[in-house]
Length: 138
Image (cartoon, rainbow, N blue to C red; front, side):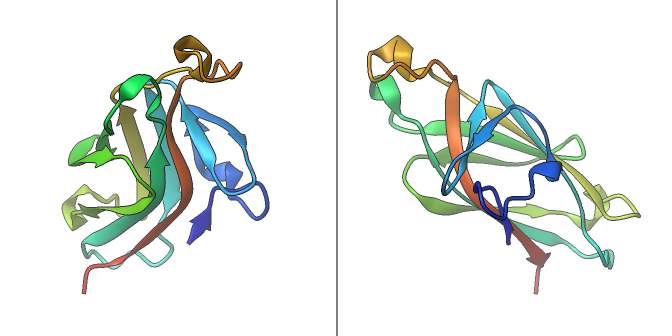
């Protein structure tokens, strides 16, 4: 797994839309968050992606809608709420020959805790990601 935490985090994979790392996770900040990674030994097979995350639900949100694209192709829509593993399959045809994946997360309704009277934190929080894992579909 690729950690998003303060210690041991792979901060080089995060392209845009991310706040600073915290002890156990990193928040998306804004409507879009982007991750860029390469599958080392790409074999032309479908990949399964697992994202360990939860959502900021300030102001009465029930969940955070997250639209997931890989290399420009829609692969999932998640309703992120509690701490869980959110899963998507990246079809082999979406992968580039060199194993590159440009993963984009469209955050439906990011909110600033300061705007809903919960704290002085004015980041537009969406989801808090702990780690990311990918493997071939078996």
